[in-house]
Image (cartoon, rainbow, N blue to C red; front, side, top):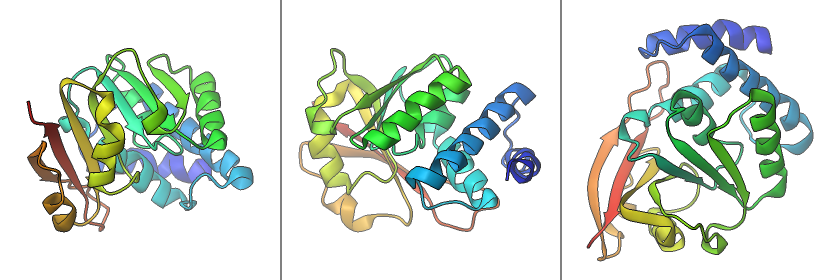
Length: 210
């Protein structure tokens, strides 16, 4: 599995105009290998094919890099650390919190930080509505957390002044956007182009009205 990822990853990154040094690419490979190993026991993710892991875990996560806002970022319902781990590896200048209520997943994430020596990430085992940080976040990310409406309701207390919500979606979520509550506003929606991945992807950027 590792040898397949070692072959696939540089090709996928290059195709999408990412030019990372060998040390960083090795961290991606270590992360996927660790995820594959834990997956065999704990079933952290349904994605097991090496090609799908490269595109749907690494490339999909990196695709929202241009839209990150500020330096304090929380990935709610992070699961196996997606998109948080790939983004943290490529943005060492930013601080990330990976939040999940599943103890098996947060144990995996804690081990990942240890083995990959990632210093700019904190893992929190809690439900989003129960987490009370001392400081708000500039970006609140979600990839497979819930509908936009539920995401806003359960995480708005985590938002810093002038912070933004970034909801990763597949096809354009027209219905969900229409259901955004009146005290929030749609900032932008961006179609994410991932070369080599046929699936449609979007990121929806939202802020709270003053």
